[in-house]
Every structure is written in C-alpha cells, then in structure tokens.
Image 1 (cartoon, helix red, strand yellow):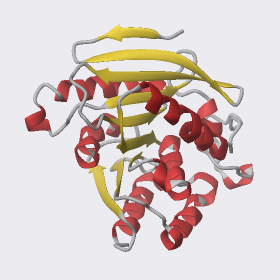
Image 2 (cartoon, rainbow, N blue to C red):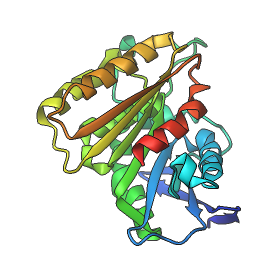
Image 3 (spheres, rainbow, N blue to C red):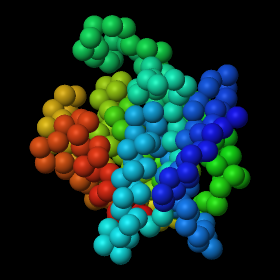
Image 4 (cartoon, rainbow, N blue to C red):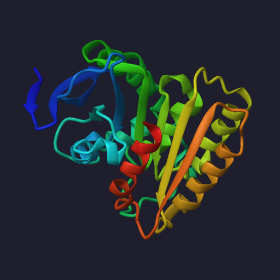
Length: 264
C-alpha cells in the first residue's frame, strides 16, 4: 500500500513495485495544478533515494514564477530501492552491461564490485512495466518523457538512448560513467549513429563538473556531446553544460535547472 503526502504545489505518492523478483520504491510528484489537455510532461529519475526529494523541491521552487524560470508543471517519477540507503548496491546491476572484472578499475575502497551487468533486464522492467504503469495511473503527455541518470545512472541513460531510443523523447545524462568496461558504451554509440531510428525529435542534455577528473568523466562527457552535436543526420538536439568549479556531486543541483529548461 502506498502513501500520499500533500505539499504546497504538488502531491507525493510512494509505493512498492516488484518486478523480476526485485523490489523497487516508486516515488511520484504530481502538480496540484489543472491538468493540461495533453497531460503533464514526466521525468523518470534513477537513484531516486538520493535525488527525488531534491529535484522535487527545485522544480517546485521554480513554479512560483514560471514566466521567469521557463519551468512548467511536470510529474517527477523516482525509481529507487527499499530502505534509506541513498545509493543502493543494486544500482550496479541495474545500470551496467556485463563486464569482465579485469576490464574495470579497482574500487577506491578496495572492496569487490557488487553484482553488475543487468542493464538489459532493468531496461525491460523500466519501459515495459514501470513506464506503462505510470502512464496508466497518471495524466502523462507521452510525447514529453524524460529519463534522468547520474554517474552509473547516466551510463544507463545513454544505454537506453542507444538501445531503445524511442522509449523517451528526452535524455538527461549527468556525469556518465563512460569508463565502464573500457568504454564499451562507445560501441553502442557507433551502432546508434549508423542505424538510428528516432521516430520524433529527441533531446539529449549532457553535463559534468569541470573538477571531475577521475575516470575522465568531464572529458568523456564533453566528447560525447561533440560527437552527437556534429551529426545532423540524426534527429537529436544536443546540449552540454560544464559546471565550472563543480565536482561529481555538486554539479547535480547546479545542472538540474539548466537541463529542465533545455529539455522541457
């Protein structure tokens, strides 16, 4: 059974979801404003335990003066995990492709990597179950659906764009872990470039902080943007935001409003 919390500009619902014998915590923020004829835009947020509350508050603050902020009411859908842990170990499985451990660096704490390599299964759960349930329960504009992911979640957002591009119309890719599996995501990017089947105009917002030196995150993110923006044959509009002086975590709030304005 889910819970409902009413806030000044939105209503928050939380409920448990079980798929493929795995439990997820779904969090939904619904604007307390009249529903547009076409429905509300929607953003799906990975790692919701860490980001959902912050993003809900940022979006809500900007709705006080939408004519100045450029932000319209939208539904936020957080996809998280049971418990209070901000970054649950299961994210490694859900957001990554299969890998030989010799092809990934040692963890900074020296511990073994958690189970990984189930991005294909999670993509199926996301697009065939969670997304359809959200569309059934809430007034969604299916032409304006955004996927947000940070770090490994950003890697998964790119994976979704390259593997199943028409699942979302907008992709918000924050500090993606392109380094995973010796940058094997670039192979999927190359295939996407030659066989892209985007059915409608799609937007890609990539961001990284200028201080993200570990794993070449900043340079890899910028290079991804440059390759995407220089390929006009693909129906993909791309923007890059470099968070000056920002690191892997501080760039998250710094970039969020920029991304909203571009994507929505």
